[in-house]
Image (cartoon, rainbow, N blue to C red; front, top):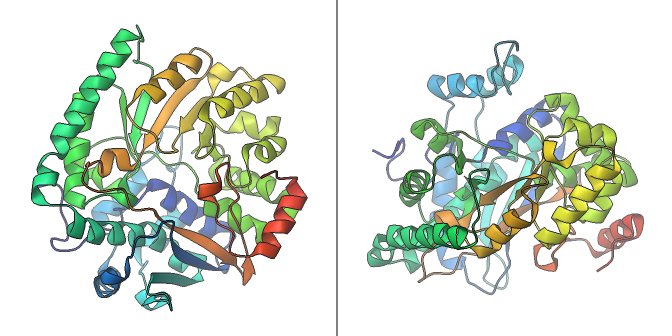
Length: 411
């Protein structure tokens, strides 16, 4: 039932994560296997997470038991496989490495700081700590929902989703909008209520939406168990780490071309907002624009971004209709998404990655405002400036100033 592998545990398997984590893992394996990093859990609100310290530590320690099972290895080998290719997305050397891959929970420290707030840091080689981001956020999120969400609230989750989908489809009809070309994806793993509710929501949503509109999930475990398509793009950590792995003014260009070096154009969504969309477009030249299938927008004004992206493709002599824009910043099945689709779908393909509004949408509890971000690479600071102030991650004010000056970033 529900493809549950580890009853009583929050993280179900090594695949109970986002596909982009495995994409990034392989790129690190090939190019940066001795790079040291630090990941830091951050609370973006005044909510107190200290009551969960002991349970968080217990769940993180239990991650040491995870192994890639043979059936999971076969599944990973199948992803992206084409008749004319020797392998799929994941190459034989990386697959062999995963057979022996283990997590070392001693690299992930859990404590309360001097203000009483929950503090979590994972420090080690990038290869060793990359998966703590999604696993830690999933663990903290579920433990928090166990306290704030009552059984009656969870029982209403499907009813709430049914009403939302009904209203969404009715709005599309009222707007005389054909949404058959729209694709929405589940991106909800890291802030879900629980694995069980995540499964139930995906199971319901992909049946409730018109055929083809639900495009799949970023969660590999659920995609495999439900026989759904999986989707993965890039994470901010890939670009942030390159701030110290390359000459600073070239870091985005290096991140883009290193990804091409590993994947040869597939998977092909480039993430645009590490230091803002304007700086990104300056580095996203014709070479990269032709090789990447599209762009992911994760902060800022989606309408402004879409128009700038279309204009940029046109300035490079590329037909925007051959490309895709994936919007993942607090998206939902609502009128805003329909208006975005209405405005641009005849010029460029529109996709939406929907996170907590799929996996944790219950009226009684706010979604936890938590992230786990890269803060150091090889002992030096890194930063995310974003197109939204609320999404910035800049632990070093001095480095933030250098980054802003280098790229003429305007607050």
